[in-house]
Amino acid sequence: MKKENKTIDLKKSLDNFKKDAERQGYVDNFLFASTLKRLETQIDILTSLEKKIEEDGVVCTKEYVKGRENMYVSPAVTTYNKTCQQANNTTQALIKVIVSLGGALHEEDEDDEL
Image 1 (cartoon, rainbow, N blue to C red):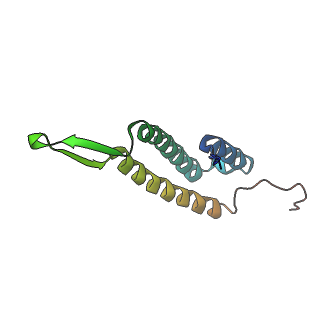
Image 2: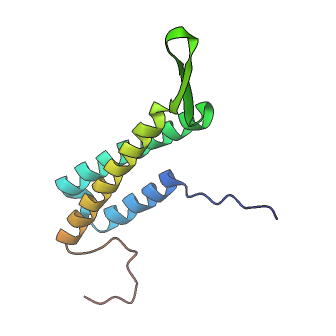
Image 3: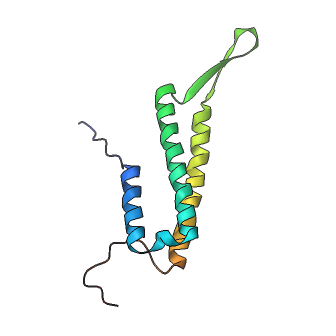
């Protein structure tokens, strides 16, 4: 059975998120805008690192004294993991900003009354 490769397009999801944020007026808030910018940068870094890991693999070898080779995890993997953690922290901060602004990002229903 062939396994389908279903991946989320982070750029597209981020664009949709930004549109929702703009509709709800969050993009004018400094804390929201600066936190979102950091998250965008982290996503760009992660995308680049994913490509690098795909090209080079997760394991590297390095030759030491007397011609012996040692295998170790690629530095790109280590950096990727650290950047993922930072992106998760940034996302949590973004959620806190949204909550402090009084809501969550969602499409407003036409039936909503004020």
